[in-house]
Image 1 (tube, rainbow, N blue to C red):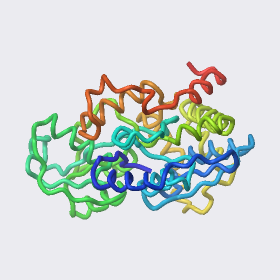
Image 2 (cartoon, helix red, strand yellow; image 1 turned 60 degrees about the vertical axis):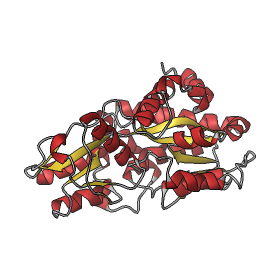
Image 3 (cartoon, rainbow, N blue to C red; image 1 turned 90 degrees about the vertical axis):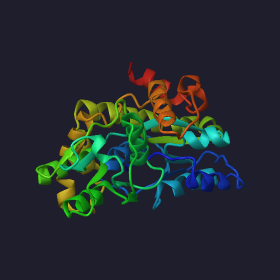
Length: 329
């Protein structure tokens, strides 16, 4: 799951419409989790943590939606208990009582362009391709063009980093933003034709777990188990990225994926950990502040960022308790 950051545009309008249905807190029982993407190698670490939590008695049901927006709508409509996304703009605009409680991944993305563009200045007025309207790649692009003092030409949208690098190698697009693994693939296969331009520092959250705050408090035990196993997995993965594939094999996770994809699990997680895709501490205060800076700079939240309060967007008690229990500083 990648290229994720919502704008307060068409997507936000649709999500706000869901509020008329009401956010419904679910009583203790099966935890319904909404994933805004298909299960893949990139979500494998999350699946490992969930399976570990299941060993401890967490009864959960994971539902994959075609789009992240649909997963968020399902939570806001009461059909799901936990969702994956970055709901900062929604929280600020609508004041809905949902809170983030664990950062799954960061927005580690790379602008890749054809060699005819030597610097960002060369892209002034030129076409650029993003993942989708209002997503992380477009937010990153908006921050960069403000920094560089340029204006992009026609914007087009091709979902999926892997699809955009295929389009680049076919000569269909010349400039885009892709994730870490696909940047590496592009450079390996066509590094003589493309190069990487400077991106953004201090990446914001790409995927965060969030839920209605009343539900989080009413289901404290289930939330504690989930957060503890997420934190434990993220800590172990940071120390040894091969733990994810070892756990996959032991737990028979994603066994239906093609062998060539499964053979690349170790390489992917080593790249991801080295590239800073995962915060071993699960986010929290520092992640929230970095997100405020990013979203305000991208024009997706109203600032100044320094005046935004962490407690208005994060419920820190589960993560703080898990850190204390596991001895994480």
